[in-house]
Amino acid sequence: MSKKSVAEKDQNKDEILKDAISAKYGKIAVEGGSCCSSCEDHDPQAINKSLGYSYDEISLFPEAATGLGCGNPLALGEIKEGETVVDLGSGAGMDCFLARRKVGDGGKVIGIDMTEAMVEKARSNAILHKFDNVEFILGEIEDIPLDDASADVVISNCVINLSLDKEQVFREVRRILKPGGRVYLSDMVLTRELDDVDKDDVELHAGCVAGAVLVDDYLLAVRSSGLEVSDHSLDTGISDRQYDGRPVASIKLKAYRALM
Image (cartoon, rainbow, N blue to C red):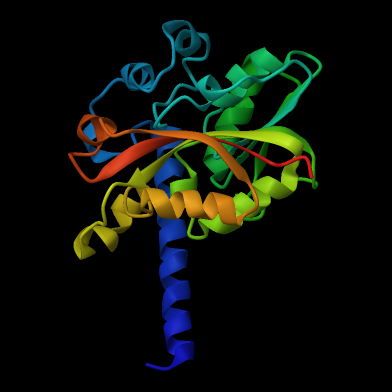
C-alpha cells in the first residue's frame, strides 16, 4: 500500500471515530444515557457521587449532572473569585456551573464541546440558572477557539482520552493559559495495552476506553507540550465499577504553565 493510501485510510478512520463520538454524545444529550455500556442502567447521580462529587454539588444542577465523567476535577485545586476557567468537553455544563460558584460574578467560565446538541443543552441550562458569565462554545479541543493567555484555569473531565492527538490538546491548553495558570483534570488512561479487538472497537473509543493511552505516554504528552506536572494519582477501582474490568484507570492530574 502506498504512503498516500495509508494516509487516506488513517484519515478515514479518524473521521469515522470523530463521527461516532459526536453521534454518541449527541444522543446522550437528547435521550440521556451513559458513555460506558456497564453503566447504562445506573443512576447518573449515583455515578457522580462515586466520582467524588458531594450530594450538595449534584443536587444544585441535576439537569446537568449526566454522570459522564471519571472524577471531579474541581476537587483537585483552588479556583479563585474573578478568575477565568475553561472546561474542555463541557457536556451539559455541570463542572462549568460548579466553577461559576467559585469565580463569582466577577469571573468567567467558558465551556468548549464538539457536540452541537451538548452545547445547546448546556446553554439552556445556563439560562435556567441565570448565569450570564458562563458561555458555551462549539469547538474542538485540538483547536481551542480562544485567545492566547486568556485563561487562569483549564479543567477537563474524561474527554482528552477521546482526542486523536492528545499532545496537540495539551499544546492548546498551554497556549490559552496565562503564565502561572493551572490545569485540573480527570481522564481515562490504560494500565496495560488493550488487545487488538478492543483497540479497533469504535464503540469502545467513544466509550473512553480504546482511545486511552498508557499512563506514562499520557504524562509524556502533557510534559512535551511545555506544561509542568505538579501531581497525579490513579483510581484503578473505576475499572470494575464502570468498565467491565478492562485495564483502565482514572488519572487525577494537576499541572501548570510556568511563569517564564
